[in-house]
Image (cartoon, rainbow, N blue to C red):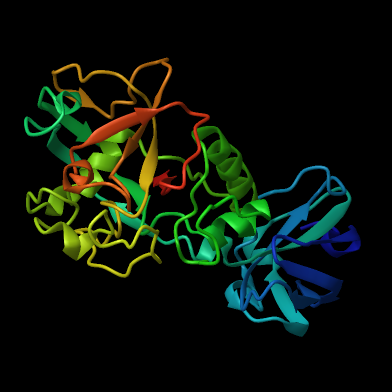
Length: 330
């Protein structure tokens, strides 16, 4: 490894979300690099996820986060001064050239608190002959492995990314965010992915229904996790005309909460009639006028909260009864 330790000339710090990094320094210690920094707490964040990056062109481009690091790095780092990261250069790189720069990146609770549930892929019968015609005809659908949000995206999670709270039913950090259009959500997801380096997205309608039905653990319930809606959903009869904090009722077979009731949830698909034949990972029509929403909401009746029920609205529509949950690839 030629002259690796003589090439370091710049050191960057990078504040993210509610966390602030200051007083970043580095030094050589044998064949390791030690980076120190201070982590300040803002907006009530209790911990941060810390990553260390380097660049070989003076900070114009950055590689992926370094893995051979120890110390105050990774998840659950509490605020305070004199934090230290040690990078074992020889274990991760055989050579370094150019103008070497470092970046310490802090992520607040926005990624750590968006819990995702793994959904093993499989084949299920999508749709229903009971209810509105939009659920017909029944057809076989196969979906691949994916992840889906354990809960709907909350007002706090939205605010951590977007620095605002558009919800009509405010003052409830753990309640689902609402008053967000399909178009608004695209902006949220773009910023979230930039901050976390992940690949969050909206679920397809097929993924949503497969997860709602319990995936390969399904017990064939009418609603999401039960045949008794009051066990699993905030709806017209029990919501007191408002949303409720996430995960207060029973989850479904996969451990996912509130897919029935609380708020309707946007899916990625354009609206279209079911085609009636077997499909694999369908994404809906290539174009359209309306986007799909699923699951029913706090001001809707039992029929609307069935796992198979589907409805559609304009992608620029906002309502205090519509929110969303995230999905991501395996």
